Amino acid sequence: LFHLALSRLALGLESFHSAFETTHHPEFCVTAECQTQSCVCSNPSFGSSSTKLFIAIMAAAGSSEAPAIPPGKVLNVNIGIMGHVDSGKTSLARALSTTLSTAALDKNPQSQERGITLDLGFSSFVVPMPDHIKEAAAKYEILQFTLVDCPGHASLIKTIIGGAQIIDMMMLVIDVTKGIQTQTAECLVIGEILMDRMVLVLNKVDQLPADTRQEKISKMQQGLNKVFAGTKFKTPIMVPVSATGGNADAPAAENLDGLVDTLKSLVTVPERVKEGPFYFAIDHCFPIKGHGTVMTGTVLSGSVRVNDTVEIPDMKIQKKVKSMQMFKKPVLEAVQGDRVGILVTQLDAKQIERATLATPNSVPSFHAAVLAVEKIRFYKASFPTKRKIHITVGHTTVMATVHFFTLPPSASGASPPAAETSAAASAFDFGREYFSADELLPTSGEVPAGSQWAFVLFERPVTAPANSLLIGSVLDTDVHANKCRIVLSGRVLSTIDPNSKDDMARLKIFKNKQKVGSIKRVLDEQTVIGKDLFKKETDITKFLNLKVTLNGKTPGYIEGSFGSSGQYKVRFHEPHGLPISVGKKGKGKAKDEDADADGPAEGGGGKIILEFKKYLFSTETSNRII
Image (tube, rainbow, N blue to C red):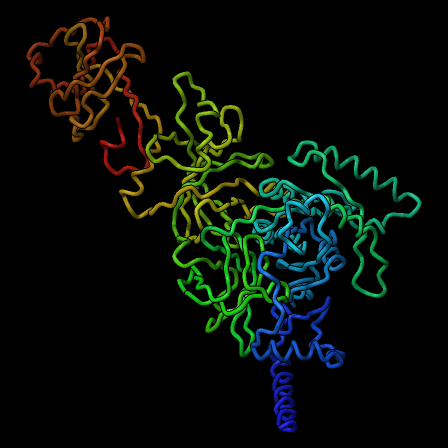
């Protein structure tokens, strides 16, 4: 029996090692015992530890002996590393991290070939729980910083925006020898939209001459303080570092401990809401032979547990969660803010590049939506209504056409005060009327935050939950131009079916229009016959009782039609002061009035002005003009 057991163990080990060589994937390692750069199971010293070998075998066999982190015991804080290309972001991630994903440190072959970051990279490290949050974070055992290494090249701004939407705090990396560059500014704009906390990392201080280093750093800090004084981050914390680690010939990294201490001092306990539908941003997907397909990403809302059924909304495919890992450690549950790998079966990884995972039937796909929007103050050009724009939601960027609108001006010409519009940013009221805007207006006293919206028509369907953040950009702008390409930010308030007349008619957006007619005949001191407002075939009964003015002053209304050539009768509320017409010989009867429709006016040349509202999304004339 003993020899039989040994032979079976040997066969099991041989099978395990054979399978592992072909299926090993550090992002979702079955051993759950990975070290900094590589997994111990692929390390020659792996076999020297009987404990690790036992855990690996049991994990490969699907045993429950593999240790799992208790649900909810890891406080995960996502930190974005952003900045201009070649500022040293990836070097900083390498120097700080102790656990890497397969997407970390430019492992993409194209990234290695071109020498720049082309995709999001993920890595992490853990630190002792800071004293100032120990009480608030009493239920957690571990503080984990997940680093999101974002590309810096201008052409990859879509990837940067997608990555920024999953982070809690930002490290803006600046090359201390160059200062603020184009993409530094764009990353700052994204930071202003998405977060409240930022650390300025002044990298590459080792490239400054030792004898003038401190002087040059101080000068750079003074200049940056002036730049950031006009931003949301008025007095940013600046940490000079040298993140040059990564190979034996590189000089030692400098002041990384100081940077970590700064990050710890800024940490607060993020609000992680477990309730509500699960929503997950997938950034990488790959197969593991014999196990299934792994989707890695960040939980944006809600929570998920092993054996839950989840859906890929874009594909309408539902799968059961087989297992999960958080940086190579098995977990039973993941909540909002967690970075996790989710294993499912019978899913072709090639079908998925960037997608989402959610509670079944909780996330809609739509072709149009109403957004609450704000103009980015760094975008100085005008942005007119009906112009096309790149809209980014999560990791998806779609071309769209936007139509901006606001609350109607008051009688005095001023916009309503902010107090009247404070609720507008969180809900959209289809019961009120809105005024069409010719362009996107900057936030100001006249246009307070929450009082400007956009109707957005996408060129292809977008999948996103309610209240999702969207960012609008003009990515076709020359990347070498010294201009901000990010135009607006907004949130989805309501979806609309653009192919439904009834649904579109709910949008009561209007333009003020004016038509000017002339007086054909003055019948008495309060009644005239007018022309030039309507065509001969127009059904004037639809315009009965519409308000008009005489020369913009004397008020009246359209009383009815007159003859059959588009003429009409206007009744004023007070005497108009025009001389009463004297009928021409043979043409004084109403039935003959049409014969002289193009003749000279006998009413003294007064103008009848019809002002009305034209509703943009109504198909009925009676609904367009009131």
